[in-house]
Length: 417
Image (cartoon, rainbow, N blue to C red; front, side, top):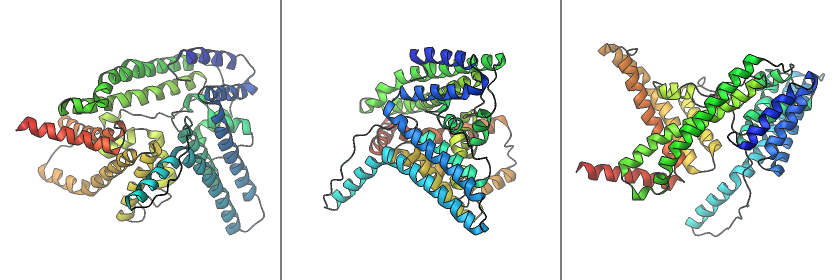
């Protein structure tokens, strides 16, 4: 069920009306049923996957608290807690791997073996990628890790926890919520508030504007060109890639605003996912502003546990590149997405390496880095760096992305000479 569909236009008011008519104590049950209906409208059979993930991670939280309550020595408690977390991670990530990456891995193995003269046709499965699996898997695993760390209680009511995992406004495209935020809200009564409704509806309207008026209109312009790029001049293709930067922002941010707005109408506060990212003055600033829920998830649950910046610069840079490669793979099973992640990770490493030297040069030349012109220049340069990587997002595979770049370069050189 798309947010911009007639079906959702009918579904949402009914959910809101009934939610605030029925007794407060059972409203979470109604929202749980509505959330599963919302997901069933995408693909009914894959609702079993989200149910499976919910049960596994809910049990992991219960087991962690059970282990903590045993009269064991501290090392044994820690060992068993880690076993529980490992099993939860293994089961959930295995499910994600099979549905999202199995065919990708098999195709690459077949290709590599073919290059060296071996024939081993590993069969691919004709499976449809479950909608939102990357989002709800990360959200559920975040809960397991939070309980392990002692950052959140273990929810005993499986229905309330199931609503946390499947809450329909942010189920299929985020933001990826933390248990410390959404789960705690689920455990308090949902109250009707006219200001929440007003703010939520305006936020939804803004999201629909970004999606329907901006993103979809830009797509009409650039899609025919990028689908048949060989028939167009490189400068036109380059302009389309610039426009794609605004399309992907308006599309994703618009969807997030609809999610935040619809949750607000129901009395829940979701975290902001974007903070004017194209106004960033450097690449590090950009990643504080873009897809905030995912960036902070990777930071808290992968980057910091790997050592973050606590084990020297070399380890910091390796961790940064690794996290961004994972981020690329999270977005899609394609080498183009992996390249996108790797290039952005490399940007951050280069920025961190040269920042001390740039600071000294600015001080020596007495450059006012707070001046408007300087900030505009930094913002434009950052946008161009980011926009280049969006090519790997839009192109159909790594080879198409490379051919598009070659086309732009050839036409640019021909134009000059």
